[in-house]
Length: 287
Image 1 (cartoon, rainbow, N blue to C red):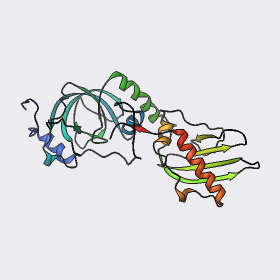
Image 2 (image 1 turned 90 degrees about the vertical axis):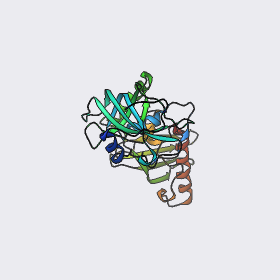
Image 3 (image 1 turned 60 degrees about the horizontal axis):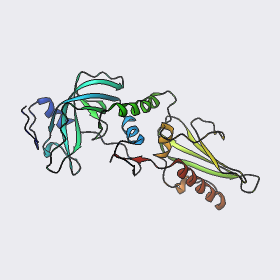
Image 4 (image 1 turned 90 degrees about the horizontal axis):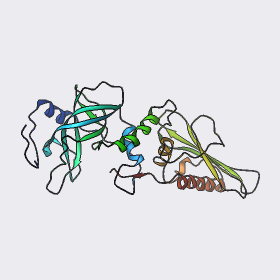
């Protein structure tokens, strides 16, 4: 294939490229709460965790060849973006145990410039978040744009996330709030609220908020069957923080508040809001 300066589209000369374009559409990311814009343009902890969590393979690769697909071969591409067919050389398998070859092929959506041209990625090193494709040498990105330009600092930030995700005691994914019950104590101003969260079946998660007279409320997360009053909030930019901050609803669902009297229901809602405020926002820079 002959490259010309700033090509707008290519007709792929490789049968493998045509097959990949026709049969391998990038998978969409899982539904997530609305992103909170982050300061700065680089990927946040949540951005990296969003990509790493569903990925079977995290690959460092060098781009060898790229081709911008014609619009008819690139359905569902958002405005201002184009879909590239990319051939790359594997530099390293950062995470995953599926076999991959030295040469890989994939599709990725990239922003176009004002002339409708994609970035020139040849010889650039990238990090890919992917699953094995349908044919040897093919991979499927976990999201249309699940490709990041590699840098040593970026890989250094990514590796602890991958280590947490692969740990035997990794915090499970939170999918919602099951039940919240607030119970008053024996003294005025004393209460305990327990929140039981839904997960993807990997294990229980509960949050406890304890209030005592003349003391600031304390809360913590338990990742076992035992509700632990000694549990503490997760540290920011950890997998446990990500599971709570990025997937806990903004407000307590009314159907999850199982307290019977109005006072206890109000306390449960207040404690949920307290936890939500304490855990903080989940900033993301990726759209």
